[in-house]
Image (cartoon, rainbow, N blue to C red; front, side, top):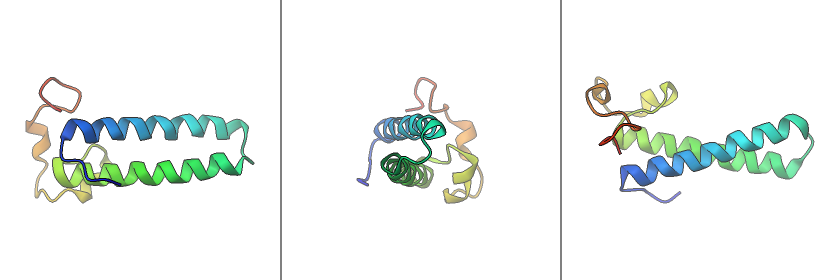
Length: 89
């Protein structure tokens, strides 16, 4: 995965791969034996996890799963604009 220097670009990447993961999960509900779709799911799940970890390391956690990836002693992100608020990205 390429390193994102811009918070907004990384957040957009997270949204894109998250959409792909959610979409293929729905497909796999009705096509559980589709190996190509399963491989797509694995690849994009990995990309999503890496992006979430990178975001947490650089900007603070987006999910509780990545809270431990943040180097903060306390969660300073509560004092900043949320990612979906103006000025948060």
